[in-house]
Amino acid sequence: MAQTTTITVQEIHCESCEHTIATALSRLSGVLRVTPDAETNQVKISYDELALNEANLRSALAEIGYDPVA
Image (tube, rainbow, N blue to C red; front, side, top):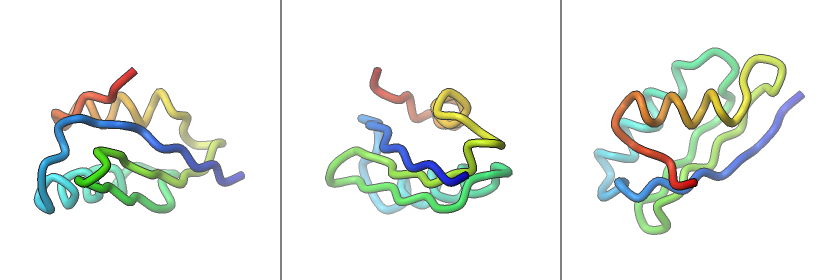
């Protein structure tokens, strides 16, 4: 079943950051759509909740250098 979450990440500064985040998260099995926004410092992610959960997504962001805000 599809789930959507929005995670705030303070380090999103530009289109390159948006591209890096979108590319990395899109590679995760179960991610359906990633929409990073440097203006709001948020990443909207649609994913299959049977394959992933929000903790997995937060961990993946941290692994590529974008620490989620609690």
